[in-house]
Amino acid sequence: MTPEAQAGRPPRADARRNRARVLAAAHAAFAAQGLAVPLDEIARRAGVGAGTVYRHFPTKEALFEAVIVARLESLAEQAQAALEVPARQAGAAFFDFLYVMLADADSKKDLADALAGAGIDLRAITVVAAARLNASLAELLARAQAAGAVRHGIDASDLHAVIVGALAAERRRADPQRPGRIARMVCDALRPATPLSR
Amino acid sequence: MTPEAQAGRPPRADARRNRARVLAAAHAAFAAQGLAVPLDEIARRAGVGAGTVYRHFPTKEALFEAVIVARLESLAEQAQAALEVPARQAGAAFFDFLYVMLADADSKKDLADALAGAGIDLRAITVVAAARLNASLAELLARAQAAGAVRHGIDASDLHAVIVGALAAERRRADPQRPGRIARMVCDALRPATPLSR
DNA sequence: GACTATACGGAACGCGCGCCCCGTTTGTCG
DNA sequence: CGACAAACGGGGCGCGCGTTCCGTATAGTC
Image (tube, rainbow over all chains, first blue to last red; front, side, top):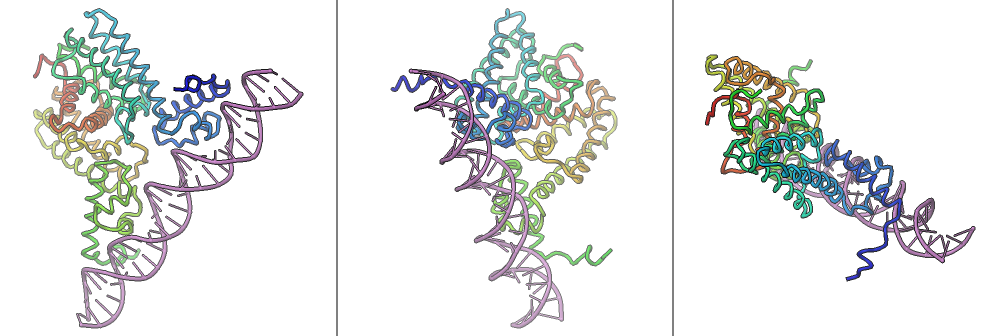
């Protein structure tokens, strides 16, 4: 349609800088307090006015989506990378990634809220990012099961549910001394029963 | 102080009935939608006016607390009952109660929210009820461990975290076809490793 | 250094919801 | 059946927060 319009001219330097600041502040604020955080506080943290936030993101939900999509895409990339291992290491790759995912989201309210769909209806973009992550996750799971490292009888949706649960559990305790304790239990739950593995 | 005042005369019949209605409606509403549900909707569901709700419960949070305390006390009673078994059945008693607890809270948002402390600061009464439940739970766990039915190396706080997580996971999927699937996985995670038990 | 489009900040608006008030209804007791 | 207190209900107030608007500041350009 209007190629010059959709390309536009590059945004001003301070605009780019402020956009980045807002995203970072929103990431921190959402992670710490979930969706409940007032938008004014995000603006304050970013050192900008409320109006500036709205020029970059049309709505608060859009801002939240942007933060979540960024995190989901980061996770999806790592999952993709985990698929690049030989079949024999499929089990290790699966569990390693699970640890990464749970550790990344440790004490972060936003991802858990988003995955749990707490109150908000996820928009198309978010769904796309989540779908990519889920696809990789399902593939990792299937390969780990084929390699005998993960029990049969569970599917991707079970895995998804368990991950959401583990996220909620980890964030609940917020125990910096022993991070990943829940993650270890979950991983044990996924493994086929073996003679005492510890 | 004023014994006639604190005893008072028995409340009117319709007052008792309406109080019960409000509690039931609040239970359903909170379970279905969490804290987010507007108070007017609870009143509407109960078939009363908003003013009536406030005459029985001074604040929305108090109403929420009343609902939660009722559920916690019910669970605490069942946990207490589960302690009445011989030591040899400690493992079964523990897992049975875990199933009850997870099943009871299946697809109920309120309990999970309350246990997770989502946004609200729990008041003294709630804490008392939760403490009683936790004490019984810890005792059940200890006995099950002593009986060799549950692995060592986890404590009551681990258990608590896992339960919160499982609640979140169960409520996420809301799959009426296969209830308790997460619960089964969690129970497997708690058991000491054994030759394939399924 | 001046000019313009772009971006900024924060005051102002509207809405939703928790909470309160008061005219009306209803249960209870003589 | 009549009278009085207890309880009801829903309209209204105030606040918090998402969103918008516009006067001001500043990056980019000649």
